Image (cartoon, rainbow, N blue to C red; front, side, top):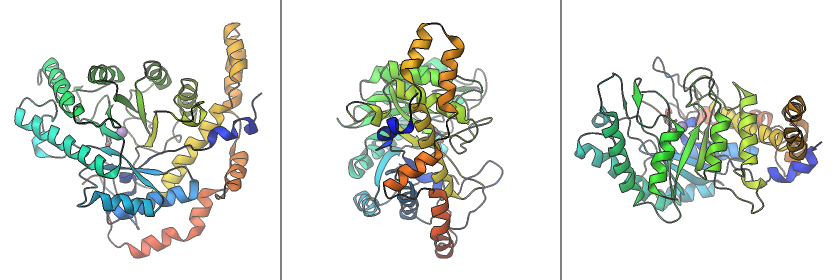
Length: 392
Ligand code: RM4
Ligand code: MN
C-alpha cells in the first residue's frame, strides 16, 4: 500500500498553465453569454490568472493567444505578469480567423497566403523572444468539407514545407508544438487530425518539435492513455491541453466528464517519466496546460476547480502501488492488478491535500477561500462591459 505521506513530496512544484482565453467570454455557434467581471484587457486576464495561482499555488504561468492578446510592448506585459506573481508561457498562433485562411493557411495552394501564415508564426516567435516563452503552439483549422475538394497529399507536403520554414526560426531553447484535432471546423478531412500525423510532421523537423495532446480532440471511446504512453515512449509528448468532453470538443472543466479517464492519463504520464516532480532530475519536458472555455459558469472558480482536479488525480495516480502492480501483471493476476489500480483511483485524497496546502500557507479549500475573498464582487463592480474574448 502506498500512502499519501509517501507521495506528498512528488506534488511539490506541480505547474499547470492557464489559457488567457479561459477568462474571456466565449460560447457556441448559437450564443456567447457575457459574464459580469469579464476582463477588458490582456492585463486583466493575467490578473485573473494570477488570482488562480494565489489561491492554489498550482498555476504559475499563463498562455497567450496571438492576435487575441496582441499588445505594443511585450516586455512591459512580461513585467506586469511578474509583478502579479506569474510568468508568461506558451504562445498560441491563430490562422483561423482571417478571410484569407478560408481554404487553409500553412497548407494553402496560394504561396502568398502560405507566406502570410508563416509570417504570423514568425511574429509569434518574436513575441516569445520578448515574453521569455519556451513553446510555440500551433493548432490548424486547415481541412476540407467535401470529398474531392482538396488534394490531401499536396496539402500534407505544403504543410511540411511551411513547418520547416517556421522551425528554422525557433531558438535553441524554444520548441514548436504541433496540436492535432480530428475534426472541426473542417468536417470531411483535417490536415493534422491525429497524433500519428502530428508525430510524422514534427519528427521530420527535429528534436525541438513535439506533439501537443488536447484531451478533447479525439473520437469518443479513444484510448487516450495509450497515445500518451506511445508519445512518451517516442520522446515526442510536448504538452497537454487539458479539458473534458462528452461529445465533441466541448472544452469543459478537466476531470468533470470522466474523472477516471484523467486518472488513467496521469498514471501513464507518471509511469512514462513525463511528470516533472516525480522525476529524479526534478523536471520533465511535458507541459501541463488547460485549454478550456467557461461559458455558463464563473471563469475564475472554473479555473480553480480545474487545476485542483488535475492535482487531485495526480495524487491518486501517484498512489498506485507500482511494485505490487508489476508483480501482479507479471504473474498474470488480472483481477489483482486491476484492484491495485482501482484502489488508488478510489482513494479520497481531499483531506490530505487540504492539510498539505495549509502546511504551505495556501487555503485548504481554495474554492471556498476564493468565494469568500471578495475578488469576484470587486471585479464585477470595476469592470463594466468587459468581453476580452476568445472568439468574436
Ligand atoms: C482549438 C485548439 C487550440 C485552441 C483553440 C482556441 O480547438 O484546441 O488549442 O487554441 O481551439
Ligand atoms: Mn487545444
